[in-house]
Length: 256
Ligand SMILES: [Zn+2]
Image (cartoon, rainbow, N blue to C red; front, side):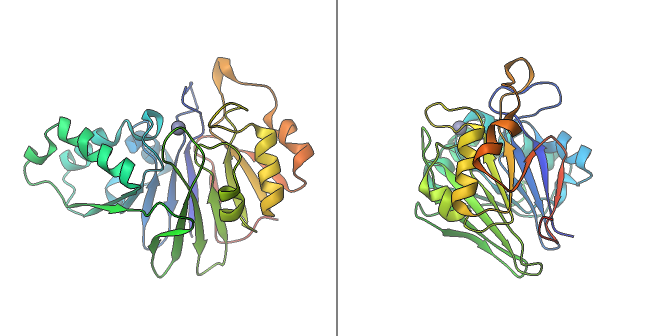
C-alpha cells in the first residue's frame, strides 16, 4: 500500500516528540526520503522501515534542519553494509552544497562505498523529479531565503495525489503544484519572511482546491503557537489535520 509517513513535524527548532520535518514516501517500487535534518535512522526504525531499502532522497533546500544529517545517514548505511545504489535529488544550489559538505568528511576515501547518484532538478515550474511505473513527482521553485522546491506526487495506480509546500511564503507555485490534490502538506511556521502561518496555509489550500490540508513544520514545545487547526479553519472548508511524528497517510485511497 503506498503511504506517506510523517517522520518529523517540527519547524527548525525541534522538541521532544517533534523532530524536524522529514517524510518517507513508500511505494512498491521505491522507499523515498524527503529531507534529512535529524538522522532518519531512528525515525525510520520507529516507523518500521528498513533504512537500507531507501532508494531515493529528495532534498528540498540547503538549510540545516533539512540537510544536516545527510553525511551521517550515508555513513551509517555504509557501516550497515549497504550495497544498493542511492539517488539524491535536488536543485543545483542544493546538490553543489551537499557534495561540498560530504567532501569535508573526505567521503571519497570511505572504501567500498555504495553508488550514490546526484540527480539535479531543473529550476523550473513542474520539473519532473522522477517518473516510474508507480508515480510521478514534480517540483517547482518556491519563495524562501534560498533556492527551494515544493513537490507534487501523483500515484498512478490509485490516482491519488499529494503536495508538500516545503518552506515558503504563500506563493502561486504552491497553489499550482497543489491544484486539486487529495492531500496538501503545508508548512505553518508563522507569518514571517520566507514562511507561512497556519491561516495562510489554509488560504493556499482553498485556492488550490485541495481536499485535505495537513499542517506541518510548525512551532512545537515551548514555542508552540496555540491552536493551528483553529487558525486555518476560517480559510479552508476541507479536512484539516495537524501532522504529528510517525503519522501515516494511506495513499491508496482519497480522503473521506
Ligand atoms: Zn528553510
